[in-house]
Each structure stands twice: as C-alpha cells, then as structure tokens.
Length: 255
Image (tube, rainbow, N blue to C red; front, side, top):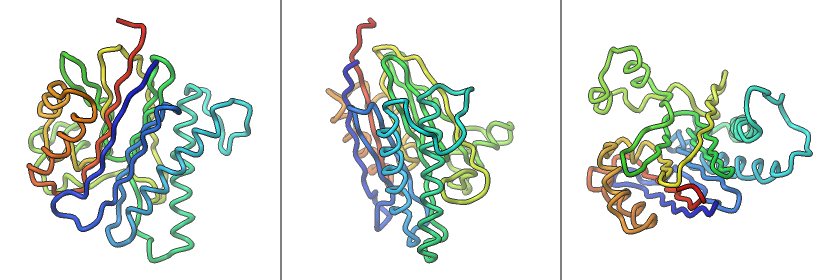
C-alpha cells in the first residue's frame, strides 16, 4: 500500500508557545499527534518525549525477535501490542524526566497514534486527541475522548453541542505522565481505498466541527492543501489552543 501524508502544527492565536508534537513516517506506516500539558511546566517537552519514544519502539519492533519490556497481551494483535507498549514506555519516560526535573512535575501529554499494516490500521490513544476516518460519504470519529465532557455525553447528561461549549470541556481524565493507572485504548480497523485518516489535537476539533472538517478535506486538491486549510480554518475560528493535524491517504489494490 502506497501511503501519502502531510502534517502541520501551529501555535494558534492565543498561546505563546506550541506544546504539540507530531510524527509523519510513511516508511514505518506510523503517524502520531501528541498534545503536551503543563504550560510553563514544559508540555512541549512531554509531547516530544512521546513522539520520540513511540517512533523508537515501533522502529525497534519491526522484526518480531525481541524481548518485550512488559507482558505481551495475547488479546491484541502484534501491532496493537507495539503501540500499547510504546505508550506505556512514553508514560514512564515522562515520569523519569519529571523525577530528574521536579520543576516539570505537572507536565504530561495526550496522544493518538496510527500504525498501518497493509489494509489494516491499528490505533492507540490516551486523552482527547482524536482520530477520524473520512470518505466520500462522511466523517466519523473513531476514538473516544478521555474527557469529563465525553463522560457526561455518554451518560446522557450533556448533549454533544453542549459539550463543545462547556467550561469543563478541556478537562481530561487520562494523560501520559500523570501517574496512576493508564487506560491505553487500542483498536484495529480494516480500511477501504476511499478512506482518509485524520489525527488531530483538540486545538483543531475544538475550533471546527466534524462537517466543516469533512468539507475542507473533500474539497481540497490534495492532502497538503487540506491540512493547510484545516489549520487556517481553526485559526479563523479563534485558534484558542495549539493546532495540529496529520492527514493520511493511501493507494491500494482495493477499489
């Protein structure tokens, strides 16, 4: 499968520094968006630790003959284990950095990562950075936000429209580096040729709705233009947070 992709990260219109990091690696079939937390406590360091750690572990496990640093989960695919362990190692790497640099004690990061193997996509995420699949028929969010408002929507307390403007909409319930039990969500999806994958931080999804995202992607001439237009539109709508988008397309034998 021939993969083509583009990614952009932008500081937005309000923040003074960009705490997001991303990775676009078609050779590995690996794509990552990490949204750092902690402001002056070095959120940008946390997100870069995540991207570097995930990239390194996925590269090291292309071949299967290696010792795993944690217990292998037989309920997951091989790629599912690769991503789960990569995120657990990222969590540990942030914690190790905090121990060496106590002034960074509040830093952490969300993450969403996609790993391709032929027509199969494995997704892993922690926090509220999102993955969407888009085709000619529409757009669907394929990750579940680990956030307070998402829990309220799931329990029928808030509507999705209410959640988008709720004052607690930025409160997340899971993050790398925050200590405690970590719930890494893993899923495997079979892809069609017509689909595109979008990974983004909440600086994009919080500024523009799903229908606007779909319109921009489907009306753009190519993937690079689509990503540029997504960033521009999020800035036009206020750019209240750092904005990161990675868009991935692929060519395959499947019609």
